[in-house]
Amino acid sequence: MPGNTADNTTLADFLDRIEGQYGKAERIWVMDRGIPTEEVLAQMRSADTPVRYLVGTPKGRLSKLEKVFLSKPWEQVCEAVQVKLLEQEEELYGLARSQGRRNKERGMRRRRLKKLWRRLYELQRQTLTRDQLLLKLGAAKKEAGRVYALVAIRLPEPGQQVNAQTFTFALRKDKLREVRRREGSYLLRSNLVGEEPAELWRYYIQLTEIEQALKELKSDLAIRPIYHQTDERIEAHIFVAFIAYCLQVTLEYRLKALAPGLTPRAALEKLMPMQMVHVRVPTTDGRVLILPRHTQPDSDQKLLLSQLKLTLPDQPPPRIQSHPVKAA
Image (tube, rainbow, N blue to C red; front, side):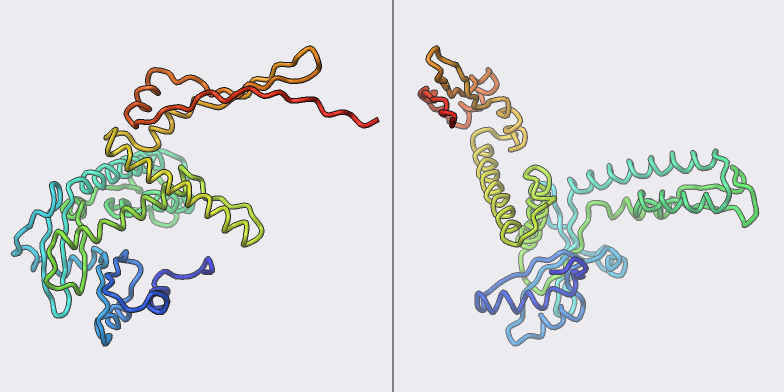
């Protein structure tokens, strides 16, 4: 698709293409909140055979439903996740609360807020014009993201000097309480009325697995940037990266079974010093003796190989290489 394609314009076409290629089936479309529009969701519900979906919902909608959710009981769906369900018309809303996600979001917010607070103090002490201050605040706002809304900022009037009296800031405690209350919460929306909460959560959490796969492809496996100029080479590049990802997933499952707690990245970093080298020894008759050798594992590497039930192959046999005869 072209680079300027909006996500929320792609869903209807994908529905038709998948159904055309693979036929009708009891599919459940699991989507992030930026993908479907209200119009497309209505079409999915009103189809002759309703198209089943589960989609994340912007937290703004939670404000409208928050009072209704207060009276609903929490249901434990796994060790650290609770869900409340609410049926409305033809849809089911699920408010999920994850302790792990809450801790992660809270840590991210604190780091960003501290960084923004330090930056505001710096700007307060600098000698700036009002226009310069506005430019620097714009950059700070972009970096802080949603955390910027937690701070109330009073700007100097046009023509006033920028100082600690004309440029002030304070924490918006009401907003902070609201954010803290919603941290770690997801509002899910589906037409799977009557489905068990644990199943809904299991369906939706697959999105995080897909996001992790994309992250590993971009970072560990370096699928980007792509410097090729033809479609065939681009497709070959992506194919090689995909095969590498399949190997990484295989290693991940092997580690889960045999060496739990160790990630593929950590395992590969431990094994990376092991290399295959070629020792070249010239002989007296002008030829070269080539000794292919893999380096011997250290104690940590031996332990990891033993846990994974892997054995190194025997050292390859040596070979003789004759120097090519130079043309006269």
